[in-house]
Length: 249
Image (cartoon, rainbow, N blue to C red; front, side, top):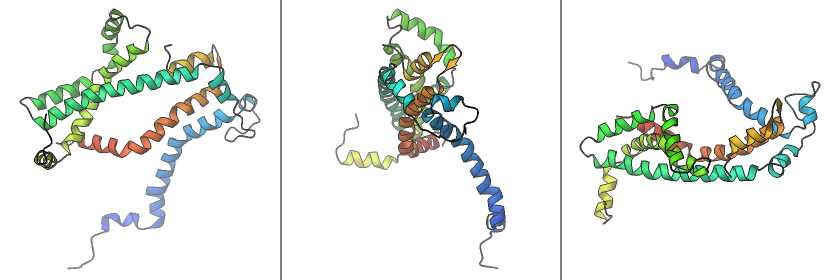
C-alpha cells in the first residue's frame, strides 16, 4: 500500500487555473458585490452636488472632494439629537434584553429543571412570530401607559423582539461551556445563587418631495454604518460561536 495521502478529491485545488476558476474568481465576484454599495456610499457622501448631477462626471471617482454634506448634516439638521436618541434606545434596549436573556438562557441550559427543553423551544418559536402581528397590541399597551410618541416607547418594545433571539443565541453559548468550570468555581467558594432616531430623522429632513439630498443622505448612512461595522469586526467571533453553538444538540 502507498503511504501517500489520498488527495484525488482535492486535485482540482492543486492546479493554478482550476484554483482561479473555482476559488479566486467566485471569491472576487462575491467581494465586489458585497463591497461595491459601501464604496458607492463613500463616493457619494464626498461628492459635490454639481458633480453628482453632472452627466459628464465619472460616477466611480471623485474629482473635487467636499465636506459640505457632512457640514449640512451635522450643523444644519438635528442629526446630533437623532444620534443621541439612537444611542440611548440601542444601549438601554440591549441592556434590558441581555439582562433578561442571560438569566433565561443560563437557567434553561445550566440548571436543567424539569421542562427546560420545552421552555427553550417555546422561546425559539416566540422568536419566529412576525413582528407585524405584535404591532397592534404593543401600540395599545404603549398608548395606555402614556408613552406614545416618546423614546421610551421604543426602549420598552424593542426587547419584546430581542429577548427571544438573544435567549436562543445565549443558550447555544452556555451549552458550549464545560460543566467542569462551574465545579471548579464551586470548589473555590463561588456561590451558585425629542423623539427621532437616525433612520427617521435623516429620511424626513433630507427627502423633500421628489428632491433627494443624496450627498447628505450617504453621509448620514456612512456615519451610522461605521460604528456598527467597527463593533462587528471586534465581536464577530463571539457572534459566530454563539450561532454555531445554538444549533448543536
